[in-house]
Image: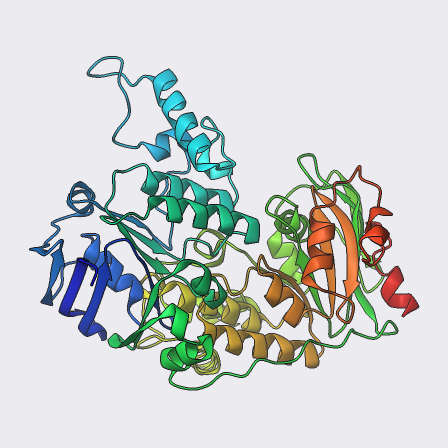
Length: 526
């Protein structure tokens, strides 16, 4: 039997009003990748923060290589060989990639001054070794969420770690980037090292993990060998019930009202002549590789980024949208991929976050807040979305990442916008909560809402979308109806360069790509 690298015995941890862990057990063998799964709020992140020295356990013991392990701080844990990639980033946006990678470990010219030349060279060597699409001198605050995630990965792997903990490392990565990460993990794992890998992307686990440990409601449920375990069994262990996937949606009829028409959308940095139509009751998926411009389209539509050219029409009337507040007044809501930066007031309570977007319209009269009405609405959406919180008075920062995401969704449901743009709506959310959000999105569409859904997960895009717009390098390269969409076709358009011949698609047996200004042609003809 392999030597145990890490043991967790009878660990418990409580917070005010919440029993996060109770009598938790776990063991990691040398040379293995152990997947740790559970619904949001199950206690996964709490356990990882205990291991990395951020929290102190109320009860129980940890053993590292057979010796008692009691980290006094995150720095102490690093010194003892445990490195963690957190689900929520721990980066300094005003510093460069190189400065973030080696914060506190910068090479120095003297005892006082840092050597920027040596720092950038050291960062470049690490970036090239890990095959990361980063530049040492680029400001982290200017990076997309996916690239910020890669900075976190690079930082963690830069330490001489024996145990690497990855908390949702691929939540913002596409399939190609996930493979790069998995290659890094395989090279890292040796007989004296191991990885604890937390992911809600169940399909990943069979490719990378050796065993899987399931926890539910802060308690240990069981551990299984990946090779002899079905994902259906794992999901049942996680949620305590079986989940059934739904069939792909049928394409929305071409005769339905066009509620949003975008044409010639261009920005200085990336977007070129982007056009599409969104119909009433439709879920329009946006697919593409990282950097394709999907998020930039959403931000341009709601006025978060400045347009160089293009028009946006709402039910035939051209709009002038200067900022997201303007968009919301026109009934267009935007759920950002970066919930903590753009979607939440993390120091405020759940009730305030849910009611804030509709405060003036629904919960205010003569300068006074209608507290009971706002609290009733918050309670209703906490129940509907199954937000795990002791009460609506709980501070949002104390919720798990997935439950924070649900609060953002609740905020826009309260606002009752006719058009909702969801950018990575299930990022960091467990399989049980994903099913609930999928159900909600379908119910919203069935009720006449029009939805734009941006996702890096192709199975999610294929499952949820009536039509799919595919982007590459800031342009629309194809548009597919649900009936004709496959992973192969979507990936073809996602990798099609703007200067390539679109007729190449015919040679691969794929649908003919649509131009950026006529993305509806194939569906209309159907």
